[in-house]
Length: 218
Image (cartoon, rainbow, N blue to C red):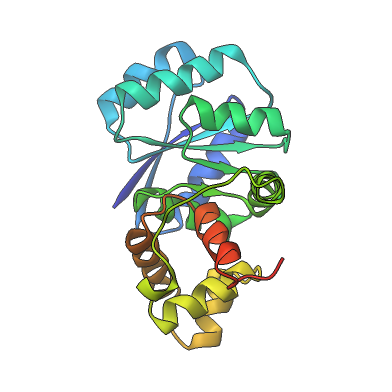
């Protein structure tokens, strides 16, 4: 069971998110206080696996809170939801300790995938955010600012290479599962094994690997 604390200042949004999460038998969702000053203690006592944190704009108090949770409750992984795709907000939340970020276009499937990914020990970012961060990476490649030492394609099986190619072509876990006649959970398991084998931490790192090794066209 994955325990999830849900923080949102609007009661109706908090209740809607809890209801959606509770529809999954593997999730236990709890609406936490809307008062950020008492939130840290509540999280420490409840030992949530994931904190789903709804945010609207860069706010010093909220960023400081994320940093505090990241240091005092390292087992609670923070997943930020925001209406904004503002690059400054995204980078600030990552710097403050968020392990995942979902934008306004994220739906139920992507939310569930983000939770499973964070629970597995990896970071997760929405597609638009992934493209933004990859844009920075590609610019560095163009300017020859990137020097990386990492395992090569030879460390992967043919099935793992196939999954990287399909995922890099914007196919969802469900679409990959349907194409390969396997379950979504098996696709997630393959991704986790790829990351472990290549010493990667995020989906973005996996795309970077695919680009660098000519598995993904840009």
